[in-house]
Image (cartoon, rainbow, N blue to C red; front, side):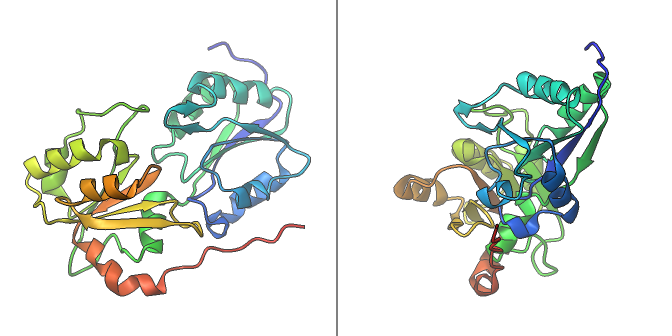
Amino acid sequence: MEKNQAIGKVYLVGAGPGDPGLLTLKGKVLIESADVVIYDALVSEEILAMINPKAEKIHAGKRRGRHSLPQEETTQLMIEQAQTHGVVVRLKGGDPFVFGRGGEEMEALIAAGVPVEVVPGVTSGIAAPAYAGIPLTHRDYSSSVTFVTGHEAAGKYRPEVNWGAIAKGSETIVIYMGVQNLGNIIEALVAGGLSLQTPIALIRWGTCPHQEELQGTLATIIEQVENTGFEAPAIAVIGEVVGLNNVLSGCRPVPLKIITK
């Protein structure tokens, strides 16, 4: 990629999973002072309301079956904006480096000669279970966690993921973007040794006031999804820790309400 002279800097900012209280202080400062903010579909309205009112706001979010901009165009947009603006924020749901393509975007920006910095965010794979009263580790139930994506491209199942090894090697499994392929994933995990009675929780809109949860076992969850119409985007948590939801969910965190002037 041809390098162009950039006058500004791009910040890959993790917006967190939805609750504005989970946005980092550094991320907040950057979106309040940005000249341009290029934001994803899963960034909450409360966080978008914090953006500098004078900043140009560009929606570049991706949702299954509804892509706003191809990845290449989003990357090129960041490069172009850095040539005319001082502070360019790429605001991404969760954490830029956890299934957020932040590494790809940073590589492209560096190749184009654009200064870039990543600002980590709270990833939904940790926050959503916490808000559902599910600790990912517990001395009595789990001392290991695996984070894995259910698909790499919209509508594409990833058979190259070694689900059998994951089934044998981790006591808690957290799956991002896996609802559409859940049947295939469960089949592979059971073939790898997991019991059909293993608890599973699906958490939609994690940490938001409208958070939704569906809890069952590997044997029942697909039928429950079909009966309830439960849809993506959602995090799946698999393991014995899911059962702690019955004890801990009454003390779940409350999403922070931000009052903007």
